[in-house]
Length: 287
Image 1: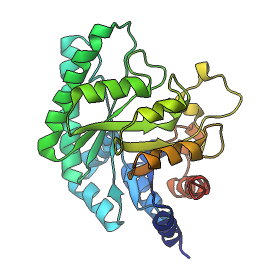
Image 2 (image 1 turned 180 degrees about the vertical axis):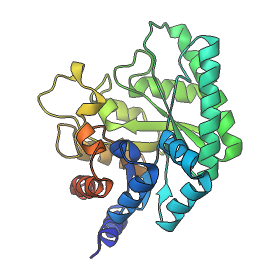
Image 3 (image 1 turned 90 degrees about the horizontal axis):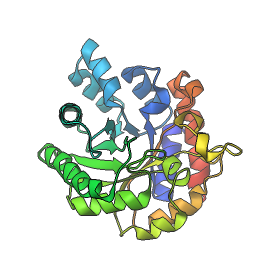
Image 4 (image 1 turned 90 degrees about the vertical axis):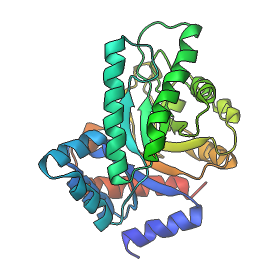
């Protein structure tokens, strides 16, 4: 069976959609990454707006959209915008919202239904800072709504403002907007403040998007960085257990492979995609 047929059969059998996040191929341009992912059998992708912008400056958004269509690729989400929910100086926050507006417009042009907004806060905060965070997230969702897009909010391990699942649940529920949903990245979930039991906080269908990756064994969590991520199943995250819980919570979205290993980022997108597809399939077929 061809690679594309094999992964589609696995998805149909296992009830999951596997996507490639373009962070894993940051050294390649948009065309090369998308063509490599499609050749490896992926049908779902998560582009980065920065890479789309680079490509569109040379070609156009219309050509980028055509590349996705010609290769039967569905962009399930796009990355990313930080500095939205945290309290920041007014000029800096306004600049971030301007960037968000541009990225949402790109998503609309390419038919991308979700855009990642992630926490970046590094300052000291108080409980009083969190209600305004929900208001800012609601503002972002208001911007996304007429463009038929959804903001997927990502907590990030190591950030001082929103580094855990429980805090993101609080902000999202306070925002209470249909176009603001939750993103869970397994690296940030297992490598940060969160506990497995925090998944019990989730309401059925509450997660909207998942990044799948793994933590290396033998590295203190305190010094882990994104560059340390390893392919699914090659580290210490109990991925099968987490995915089972997510399925119990009625998660039906994609599992998007997101690694930042420079060796992978500099590699051939096709070869990297084949390697990571096999790794993720080995884990997910056992769920």
